[in-house]
Image (cartoon, rainbow, N blue to C red; front, top):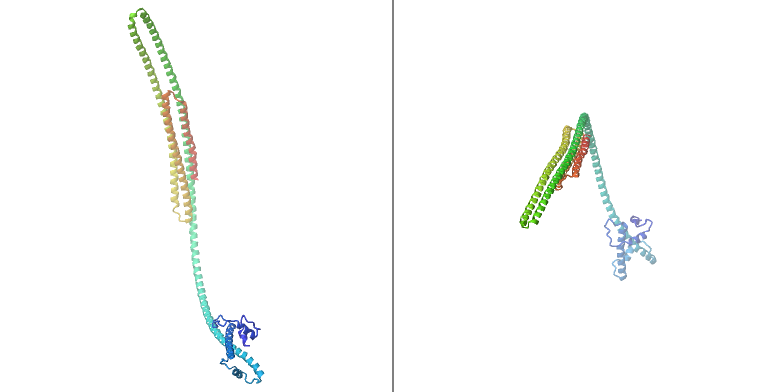
Length: 468
């Protein structure tokens, strides 16, 4: 059956030719049959549609008497040898009309088959060309694989040689590193011995420093006791001078009072005499008035003499008191100077100790900078930086303490000077010495000594931490 060649995805193989024909008729007649996307059944449908148009045109012309095709002649030529009866001829003629259409359809199918065959041959040729090209590519790939295998073998050989040389170099570097490590351990033992020796020396210096501090502390306490005794003695002498001065003043005042009473008594007697004379002698009134004026002048002279005597005694007592105050001020200034000198000595010792530590660290850094082992050198440099930062912190702490002590001492000295000035002013005003201010000054000087006692263990602790 030629229609079996036209079976496609949309035609069932069990369909008859009429079913295939009906299916093909559903294809539009203007479909492009030269496209590769058109199936054989679609091409058949286009051909059948075209033939149907021709058949329709012929039927209409026959009916109108204008057809150019002689249907009877065609049928006679196509069905020669067939029965000649009219009924049979009519039947055969009806059959032949369908056969002509089928024949025309088969011719169209044949043409489509030829075109499909040509396309298949072209595709086959292309497939053969692609297969040939694929074989060539496979051969080239095999050649490349062989070349790659040769290169890999050569690379493996070169890599093995490199690994052997690298192992030899690594073994040599390992031996050199081990030797350097041994030398470094020896230097580490020497350094540890040096550190132990420095620690012993530092302990000795610390012991000497502590002994010096204790000795200075004892000296300060002794000076404090001497100063306290001096202050007590000065206070007793001042009290004694006050008692003597008060006794002298009372004696002078009693003497002046007795003289004034005697003079007053004499003046009273003379006044009584003058009164009696005035009562007896009115004419002597003028003389009596002149005598009273003289008496008033004499009284004023006596009073002025007594005042000058009292002023001279008071001025002498004030001069003595000023000398005593100057003596006490001199003692206080000497004590403050001794305290400040002790502070300066302590700070100088701390500064010298910090400079010694700095020199030791510099020597250690110079001795360690000759190492060629990178890892050990980095570790030692890290330790060196830590030690340097610790020394810097210690130096800063010592400087801070020194500045604090200096500022505190300057403030205390300024306060003491201000208090002494105010004390002198108050003594000038009231003629006495306040014991409270002196006791406050002694308390402040004791606070200075306490600060020095507190600072010494702190400095020793920082030095011990740096050595450790």
